[in-house]
Image 1 (cartoon, rainbow, N blue to C red):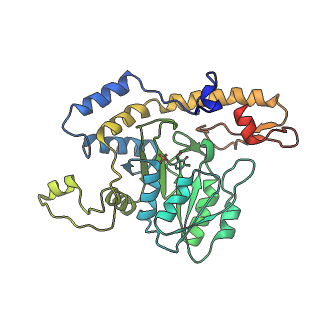
Image 2 (image 1 turned 45 degrees about the vertical axis):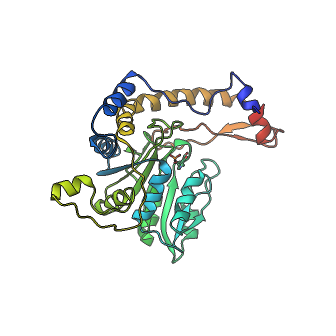
Image 3 (image 1 turned 90 degrees about the vertical axis):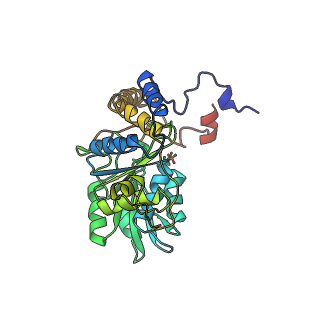
Length: 319
Ligand SMILES: Cc1ncc(COP(=O)(O)O)c(C=O)c1O
């Protein structure tokens, strides 16, 4: 059975990846090399995105969800620990807390921006709270000054779920530089893609060490560390997963990153056109854009005024 959505030839796709000859060449070269996984392209991709994020360290993993899970494990979120996050996000943000046995506690968003409201975060803090996850919904970065202040005041970790905001900025600082741990996704609907993929960036050496152990079955020393030590010996430090990203995916990530700036610029031009268009349309309004940095526009979200638009959200979607 085909849905109405599939029948509409002229309907804009939800997302469309963009792969060019440079990307293909980079992937081909790795496929013909000795290292398909755990090779040099992984570190190169990690270093390049960390550099662009003004972060010291990066750890590539095989999805944004894996990045969130690894972040929770690195912070040692345990059964009963509470993690505050907004309800306006993708399920993976809350699921990652649950994977660790933690309790997701929802703090509401500002209705104009759909970004987590720092005052609501503070109201939800209890003796069990360990971390706050800010989600840069649609590509606009959250109020990090206020969130950092709250995290510091209560001794909490601040995590940025920046799966929508790679390439965006907050008061001149790039996405990836505003929290203790930042998480990115490279799913094809995102700004840049590795097919599936994700990354954690941070300035904290211990946190990145734990992320890297977690993504590799919990093994204390990876292959390269063991080679350097000239020892086969390793310990299983924690029950980890195989969340590794392959070298050919990382090679794609590196060439995709070169196009990020242009893509953000292009998305901003298109968003401006939508803004102008919706100014003329009664009953439909875009989300508020705060004047504090570059919006990455993963999504362009509009709100329907039920007093003017009589159709339901589903009817609008199919009309
Ligand atoms: C806000 C947010 N967090 C996390 C994820 C999970 O990323 P991935 O699909 O790479 O697992 C997504 C994916 O769409 C997302 O939108």
